[in-house]
Amino acid sequence: MDNMTPGSPPGEIDLKDYNYLALVLGVPLILVIILGNVLVCLSVLTERSLKTATNYFIISLAVADLLLAVLVLPLYVYSEFLGGIWTLNTYICDALMTMDVMLCTASILNLCAISVDRYIAVVVPLKYNRNQFSVRQLALIAATWVLSFGVASPVIFGLNQVPDRDPTVCKLEDDHFVVYSSICSFFVPCPVMLFLYYWMFRGLRRWSGRTRSQGACDGRRALSLRFSSAFRRAKATTTGSQEKVVYTTPSGLSPTSPSTISMLTPSATPVTEEQQDGAVAMTESDPVTTHMDSMSDGDLTERRDGGSRRGKMNAAKRGRRNSKSSRVSGRERKAMKVLPIVVGVFLACWTPFFVVHVTKVLCLSCHIGPTLISVVTWLGYVNSAVNPIIYTVFNAEFRNVFHKLLCCQT
Image (cartoon, rainbow, N blue to C red; front, side, top):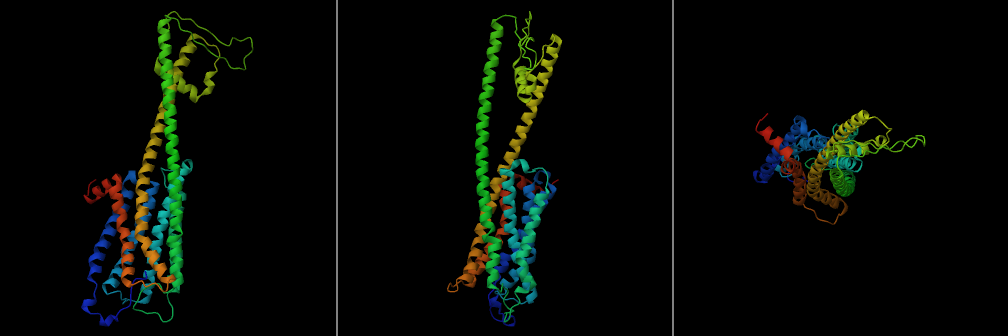
């Protein structure tokens, strides 16, 4: 946070030097961040439908924003109100810089962890557990916070304690650390995150294409079965009351065994379409049943009824599986609509901050004034208040739970 510029000594601050705009903007911003992110955490922890793996990553992101509003922003607003002058102890300044770097890094790494989790869910769906919070996801969240502290820890361990340090300015004193922290916190995670989202949306597109083609094939197959069953019923009606039932025997039977058995019944009941569909489903699910020995009439009736029941059960199970996969697909697509917006807003808010600070260090001839640095810093902090608004606007479940919590409904 290299945005606090030196001014007159603290004892000589005049009333006109106070930056009241910092209070007008800062205090409401802190309150909005705290309220919004507390609602996000409570929503996921209290609403059963929101207890998904992705939303636990969102809790981690909300905690980072919440800690930023509680530990960093009050001191930053206080310093801005004094015109950018630091009046507190330098050790408090170092703690502030450490928390600032750590929480900013935690935000971007949490978004990166979400992209990794979404990539696994879409590209390797069989290895992804949508119903429970797995050890892999817990490890991802823990890794984001450990890495974030690792990036920021040099400041609290004395990196800022340099000779000739100005105690009235709170900033990162080591220019090399500014570049290092910017690369670790932003310029490396962002391309990785965008690359994962690119491959994830590619996988979703291929998945949708396969689903549509499979649905078309299933539709053609069902239409063919309906036509064939209608033709058989019409043929049974025109040929009278005789029905010919053909049984095949396993290939392992002796050559003297009859391969087919014809049975003529004087008043055979036509096979219904539902029974035929059940038999087809049973045949697809259990190919062994296509090989049967000769049997009595009673065995035939029992087997036919049992096969029809099994076919119906198998068809029902397939329907439940298909509907479940459809629900999962719809939930994945809802997440896909919200997360790119969260990532896009984060990049829009924090890219100017990192570009300006790295440019100031690397380009010594570039004049970057304190006003520009203050503007890009405020823009980055605004991002912590935007995420709950995005969830409210683009996610109906979050919106309903927010309304329930704010209105104290049960």
